[in-house]
Length: 202
Image 1: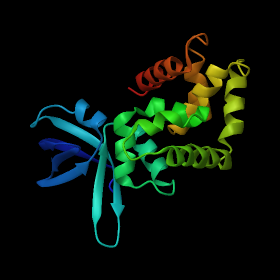
Image 2 (image 1 turned 90 degrees about the horizontal axis):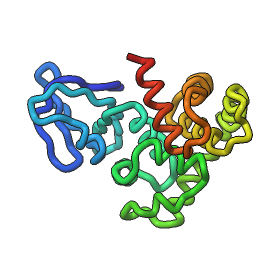
Image 3 (image 1 turned 45 degrees about the vertical axis):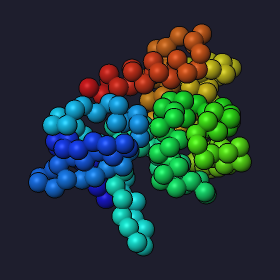
Image 4 (image 1 turned 120 degrees about the horizontal axis):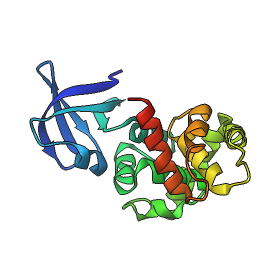
């Protein structure tokens, strides 16, 4: 499995970036969000990747950060959602909003993506919430919220759940959110917590 590619960006077009590594150009299909964060052709870039192999083809998908890649992989587990649909959804929403949508159980925001109707949007939310439940994340969310003595705060609980949807551990989510004001909207709590986690990794 190709974890990531890093090298010179040699080509850009709609939802496609080609990065040259060791003399080989890797064509990575991607989202509008990732495209907007890439520099000009000739710049040094890194994309986290996912290789999708089918009987008749193999396609490489690239993302600017692990959060977007995690959301992409989660979407592919939903019946009826293929790579193209997953890219379209993540082009219309960022990982934070996507995770919050799943965590809160609200499917309507997903229907703004072309080709995603109410039924598919509901399936995405239901199947991903079920996946989270099977992995006992729901219990961990309560524990994480309890760890920061804010278990009764819906905004904090939603933020913890959203961060765990993005792939962060219970302790990482609780630690970051404990440094953010619980009075903020859940979406803002998520954004600030991600900044805190990001700065701690530098």
